[in-house]
Image (cartoon, rainbow, N blue to C red; front, side):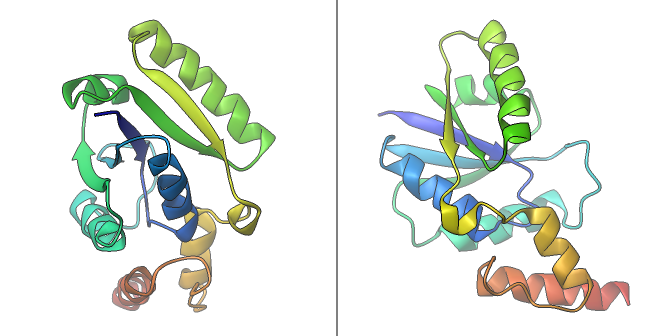
Length: 161
């Protein structure tokens, strides 16, 4: 079985993330969307919340699973028997960042390939940051995130007052 890890903070998961996972699934038998629990980011949702949102978003997607991890991504990939890491690209700056990370990951474990998928035109502008900002300013990002994510964003920002 060809397993790929699609790592990210998924804070929150968006339609763009799900599009990359769907397209990666055409290449791999299983795609594990993996929530990194210690990113150097200011997170809105906890690891468990992000994982729950991701699980609900992927429940209808055969061959796509959700997991969390707290080690180096290539080490996590190795422990679950993955042969590749999948990343999505929206911009040239994404490419530069991902290319650098791919070289680092390949120097750690050359047996795990890195597959970069260009964002679909429909989702090229979608980012978790933009979705969070829209929701924080009172606009439901219904065109960019699944309904349960929009509801979770609404609730999270209502709690913050």
